[in-house]
Length: 111
Image (cartoon, rainbow, N blue to C red; front, side, top):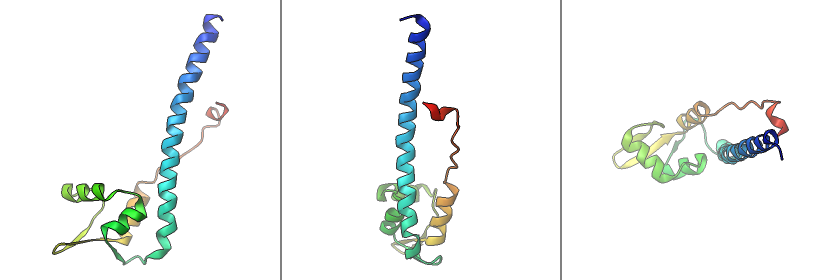
């Protein structure tokens, strides 16, 4: 095997592994988004949701939602005494703001 062929194969394998990892991440993100879309019709835009409902809707764990609340970041929430609620419209806005547009490069499709 000549040096050029060995280099090409090494580069190919490296790029292939990188794309496989990206594909897994992309597939997981698509799954979470599709699960969220399934639940969209359950609620009206002015509904107030508890953290469990938000977790089911978005795929974000309860632990992460609680951490974000402590840090006062990501999704706005309403606190009424000890009760925490999220506006459904804020959840939709958060999902839209965090949706990544994906464009397939035709040159990379041949791998």
